[in-house]
Image (cartoon, rainbow over all chains, first blue to last red):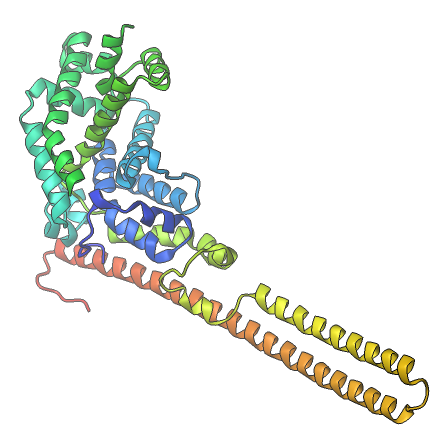
Length: 200
Length: 217
């Protein structure tokens, strides 16, 4: 069920979240199946630990089910809300560790996911998500390396411009400029996709 | 900060790269209703949440879903019954709840029967008093007949009340039984998911040990 679900994470219907809030079991299953691969991948990228990524996801889904956190349309699409929520919790967890030591994912860890990971090989199941994946990968790959690094360190490791500057041996203003320019280029690249999406 | 500086800070804000003071200044500016900055904020926010779509996707372990389902079971077992009367429409799997009327309408119908009984008694009494005033004491036989009819009607109504109560009770029992069965079904489904997760783990372990083309049903 998890693997063969044809539903895209990028197109989760807001009504599905409403049904989950009402306590509907099937809706909860569907929301999990649609959103967990991207949320888990992101939590794993931030924390570098499968156990911690699992704990973050467990907290997020349980809080949705128990209505500790609530979705409203003003917060954007359901997946935008879920990504923001999961990222925020993963970054908080990363910061509470104290020293910025990230446990790298070892080959043994990779083997533990078994055949599921092999079947997917880093790809989304749905075509809509795959299209978005290709688009953002291409747009990101076209950025100069300092811009890529600055955005990644900020978004996935929660580092401040000062910390990034120290790590990359750059000026703080230069780091800010890299992030600003990089994000601006990504916005331009995604603009056409959003326009097509809206017209569809 | 100038407006230009605030606008430049928006992309840094969405990736969490602003210091607290800068962040608070920008948030105050966004709350002030600056349309260009708010539009830029929405667009950059969309860019930020699109970034994870570029990652290599690693599906979570199957066991995680089982864990989450197990952790939320105490709540899920209570909530559907507590919330069902407030639901505005039929949800998938819930249509069975609507085979039986909820408790409030049946209570209303019971009150309605009692009201009818009371009304019937009132009509009979009115008829008796009217007869008494128009015909005096002359027709005692008719009075006795009317009294007998009233008693018969009363008996019939009492029987009807008993039957209604019995049916209501059996419906309540059936509804409770159905809810219990549905809860059992949900639990079974969750157990099945957990078993599937365990099977996947076993498959993964077998694959690690170099086992080839091992099929577990």
